[in-house]
Image (cartoon, rainbow, N blue to C red):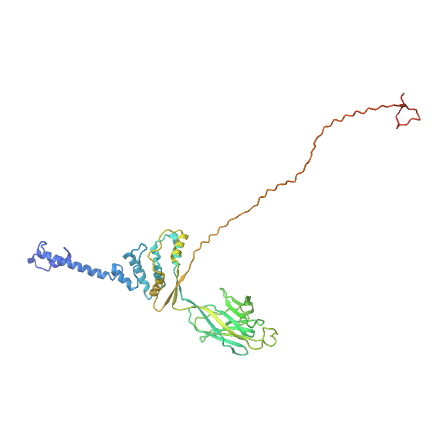
Length: 429
């Protein structure tokens, strides 16, 4: 019996004995009440299917299709469960409010590659915080796609006894950038060079640099002007550094090359030829005005664009991160889509009016583990001296020397005053 049956029984008078459970009328009303209960449950399920928190099966798939989100195939070849799909869909839907956000694009691409949409789903322990940061950096977005631009000016005009070229740069960008300028002198040498960024109609001051009086650019040479990361001027002719030969336009300050501004800008390049009292009779100076051309190149950051950078060998990149951080768990959740399908994911996730592009990066993981080894080599040589010599050493000799000398003597008695002392004379008889 259900509450639907009770309500039907109450509609009949007591004379019909509709409350008797064994009566035919009650059984009929109970069967009708059961059908009402089934219909009521269907209506409830229909209402629930409009809510992500309660929808299941095909109803949940239908809600995901509104945002172009479909179930992923898991690594074990099974389809994503309702609970997992519901969590991913709930994380995607709020990010589509007002168009695709950076987080929405990152999550969609990461999910298409097989990683979780939200890395919180990995439940990495706190000791693997560095691993999480590295995984986040695998897929990154660079807003405002960089694009190389180049403008060449060849229309040389004579203005106030000098050669002059003007360039107008009117290409939209969202970020200023330091240009690289190649100033090539086709005919004649150049003196008193000046580069000026002219003020706009809205105001501003003239910015630029100029050369010192003793600098001469030879005919056929190219002067390259650029800036280092700190904004210091770099001036080169071949390998010869000439930044010390330039100053600001006032002639007193440090030379700084102007940046390409965000809006439209006009640049003026001037050079003179040999001047009276300053020119020398060599191959550099000429009295005819120099002919030159100027090439300005810079990086333009396009508005309403972004680039998604993805490792081409993602599997190898993740395996290398696991090895570096000594992590043995699983990082891939879904069966990743083919790489050629990632561009479509970016296109579906981007906001209207925004252009997104996909950039694959080739990362070859080579292990460079240098080890310092100290090796000492020694040479052992055994020398034998075979220069032989004979020697006789006598330390002590005992020699018995016997003398057997016998002689006879005849002595004549000495006479006083006659005998001498050197003959054998004796005074005794």
